[in-house]
Image (cartoon, rainbow, N blue to C red; front, top):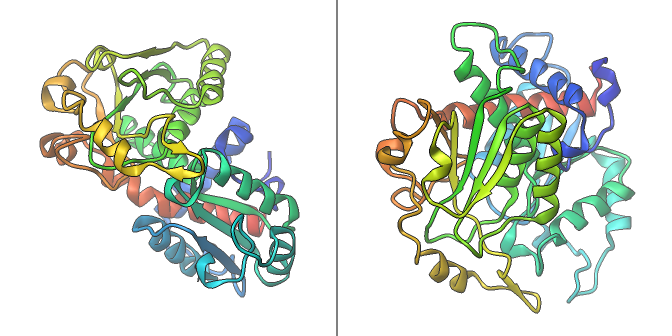
Length: 347
């Protein structure tokens, strides 16, 4: 497969792409990381603009996309929908059809970030991205939305593989047969499912055994669970769920401890943030600590950040010698450079 075959492609969820397509992104991301300021990359987006819709604020996402565009010779334009006259369920304004087609005349790519507190029901953000993709003639990239976070998923796989292949060239098949534990963490945040669901999907695509652990009442999207199980079946690997706080750690190679909201987080178009926080704080035993990590097979600790330290994970683990959180955060830059180059230029 050639790089040019990804030109113009939307990236809303990694499950929409084949593994060999994801491999192309990772191959290029690693080369761009190794040769960060090589002249062969620094003008790929010359005179091109990546438009960024931020319904929600960020730390890593805005910085990494703006730096990525700059290092490729282009420009990233920050846009806040609240300052634009866009149609919503409650207000009159410009439709997605019109906005998408006009922006396609200006920019060369469109990123959208819309999370739990900016939607009235689970899946509304995904619907919005796919509606923009329908009417845009430029690639639409998810910068994290209520269902998926593909850039984070790719950064995860890149970081985990680099850790497992330390001292050698990363082999994107190195994750096959390794156990990924995605475990719920208690905390004072009501977080969307996007990052953990992306980790499950892309981890299973890369041949990992996947265990999802959570208290009763914190189940994830049934469709994502089904896809994860199907991916595992296709790779002849194992998928399981558990409501036990420690069993999933046994034999794990990668531990992903993060809080996520319950399926009851929305009621009549309202996000019940405070109720979700109160519900989550009832499970203090669901924290990743050194005692649980001792049950693993010398596992890596991973997290997309920001971390709710003292709730999702202890400082000892998050800042420990087996934590890859900063490597994964750095890789957001490199995979996003690769995504932008492949979808906006085709190289």
